[in-house]
Image (cartoon, rainbow, N blue to C red; front, side, top):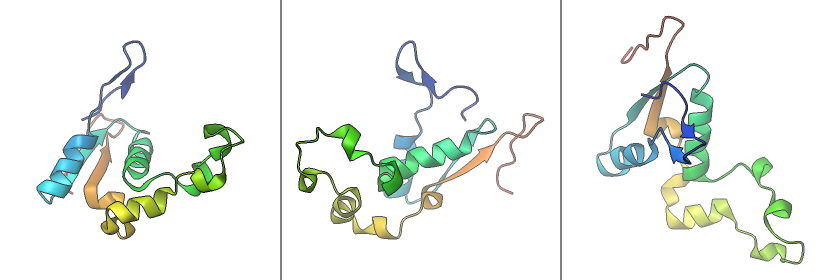
Length: 114
């Protein structure tokens, strides 16, 4: 359950550690987890999982900002192919396979299992 902020900017600490439990449940226990969060946070949670597990979208990769101009482009990472080489199941994997994200409604309630 993530009811407030996900990150404490003062201490630099994550207040919502859900990646390891989700990965452990999916890869080891072969089951999906449910994340319950405040309204408006589900998209960010899904994006975090997508990027950490499957890599960033091409539109979000900014090699010109990450590497000096004199670094040849063939030295830039190829996130998709490197990920597929490590784990071919990534080709078919969707974030919805790992987790379900449910937001609290306007009453502060979250309906699980419906």
